[in-house]
Image (cartoon, rainbow, N blue to C red):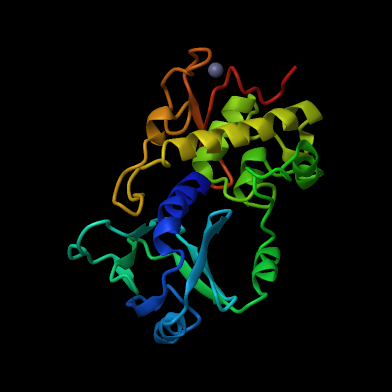
Length: 279
Ligand SMILES: [Zn+2]
């Protein structure tokens, strides 16, 4: 569930607190988190690492270490990272790992559904790791142009919504921000990705950026589990134009929002603003 804006919110909160710190102790209580590696082995490898950068790529949170290694954290459905400014943690059956830093503070990883993953990469392995997963460009960076988006969608018969979800066209866009971006761009979610014209793609590029930037400015969307490292909810859910709003009026034209499915996911759109056969 956490998408680019949620992960970016977590990254921005953690960076000033973690950068420069050394990991003193790690406890990983869920073997699923590090599989196929045993959790004790990963915990032992992390101890003594000094954190030099807290980055993000798509929906991955990346801890960069002085050694050149990286820890890639993917929150999947329900993962959250906790770093309370004051005091320790309350008892929590969903806490899967705790990292003790050299300033005495603890960073905890919580995950109700347990789909989240931690992968420890050796120096130089990062680019290959993302290439193997065919991870697309960063939509908020300069390299995300109409041309690159157009190239990523060319010839694809999948619905544009599904194409956005698979991360190859733009890293970090998930179910919420795909629907919000398609509404902004006035593109029907079931249109074949390869059928989009250049002006559709130009609007879509802008719309993806605008939807993600709004999400970041609202510290992400909290529907159920998402919290920032201080335990605070996001506010983006108050700004949804179509996502989860079936039957409610489109904020642009007043037509009731409809729900369909694309890429196996619930998908919301305005049947008036987003025509399947435009023109
Ligand atoms: Zn509308």
